[in-house]
Length: 274
Image (cartoon, rainbow, N blue to C red):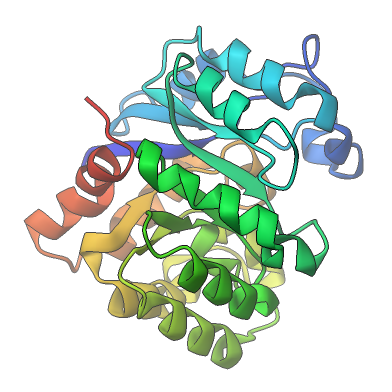
């Protein structure tokens, strides 16, 4: 398997603000650059990356995309504000910034944000521009994700981090039901990312993660799953090299064609990568 990383975060503190990292000691200082990521994936079968917006301070989200546009990566998933004025103008600019998709982080926002009429109307514009939207919801919010997806059925949506399951709390049943429900919507894809940081004292291992990942694969199928590192947030779990190795083991039971699809084929299709 040769992976395309669809969820690489970068932190460039001299250019942008990252207020949320102050409460995360592993991420609270220093930069996390493309060169750092390249050093970690070297020799591990990762052939390229999309930079995922990193929750920069509100005043900086457009500057983040402008900065990433000049980096040696496959493209980016930029931050957006569907609830705000100027959404169309921002999408127009994104067309020249190598933007392959957009995201609005929702799990840290009021639950009602994604339910707003204006938010949904703007989100539906993405389909006409060929841009997928990455959805980031907590497990308790999968009902909100389902409602949003059902209201925006003419575009590609990607559920990040397998719906953020509470693996440490072993809260499987409600999460699994939510995954099954949203997977029934054929325009929703899922991203195998992030979950290695959710294991707590159980530790991120193939044995711990397998039932969760197997449920996601069973619900969505290998044809609707992409892979991501969630670096450097993955450092809150096992770190990037171990996450790559764990991912290979978790996907080893798939056919060769299915492995290629999850590792990079679906990403090329969904994000329209060359």
